[in-house]
Image (cartoon, rainbow over all chains, first blue to last red; front, top):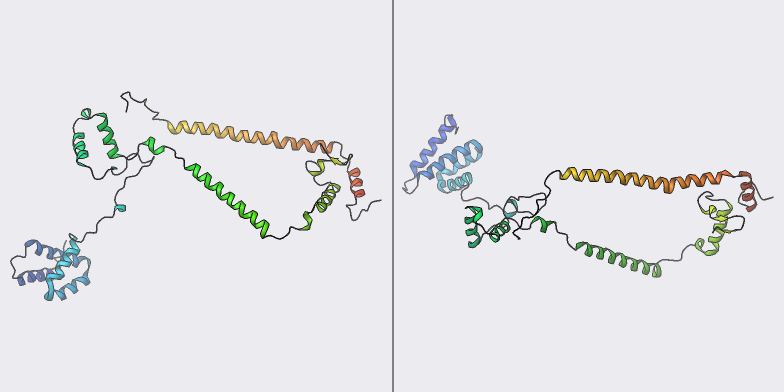
Length: 221
Length: 77
């Protein structure tokens, strides 16, 4: 598996043996040497270029580079701390009845004692203790989760307020900004226009000409 | 919490109940809308057209329009 049967593998293993032989210090543990062996084997398998580099540097500062390679390969001291957002999280949702973690992460001494008591028969627990256990596990009950708020009043109030503000702005615009409207909106023009529409019998079935009494010359009652 | 147990809530057939309610509701709402339109808008319109054309004389209408002076190619007499 580590390739020691191959020619290249045999060269590497003999080199590692040479390193060990060169080290005079008796503090060097067997674990360190094993780490070195395995590291070199892994590197042979996965990073051939690094192997050549380490072989070149090995005679100069093998201990330092070996340590770093060792740490890199095994990752004991170099593990990145898992961020909170990447761990399973608690969530209050109607469609998630049992969240991945309990709500309370760090229990107080009292709560820890209660958790111990929970391991025994549950009939021994009082109602308050049961409620406390529930609150440790969950933040809001379904009733609390589904409870409505008064947010709609705020939303409606905000909407109406801004509508009113917009209306004020429009009034200011009409008064101070816009020019006069076209002359075709004057009363004389509109009455002449309506008379012409009636003469042409516009919309005689259901529309304007149906509302006019042509015999009496007035609007129908 | 009180010592008396709460009544056990409905556990099963929740979707079936909701579907039945909404199926009936959707059917009656849509049929109701169609009926309202038919008898509120469509039928009165049909009646108005029938009334208009019952005693309609196009020539009399034309002469009235001509007298008002709206035609370019048919001036008033």
